[in-house]
Image (tube, rainbow, N blue to C red; front, side, top):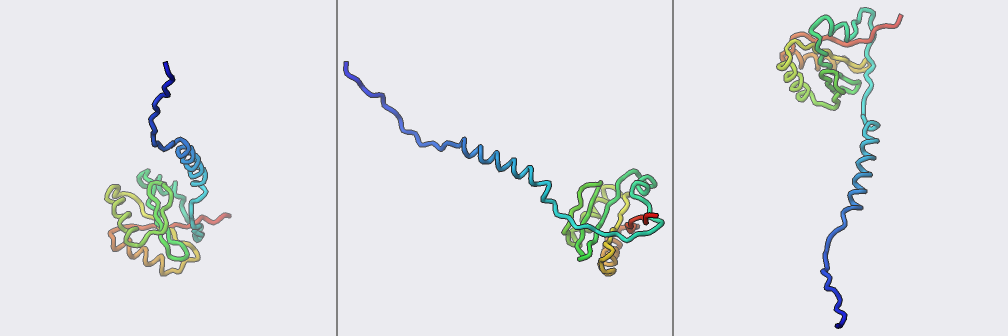
Length: 148
């Protein structure tokens, strides 16, 4: 009996295990760094002595968090609905579309505009006027209570 070598088939396969490992590491890196990448603009609200807190305002109305429209000192707009994170960088038309949609879902929602104390008055008036033309009946202005 003579020795016969086994016939081996040549297979062309890509070993994907290292790629899965690399993707897993990248996923972990992105998940860890994502909370640090949030971009925000601080809005320095003007202060008053008769300001009510948002909790007092919600308690008076309908237990529903208000729709907050924010105008920063450069005139950029943002919106926050149901105490969610502020979405910034919206255009006026996009902002009005979001406010109308929220008011159709919850007609009793309060709309509050928070304008930066350093923002030109014109930016805040333009936003208030656009909200009025969009059919928002009553709009409140946000302020910070004075510390006494």
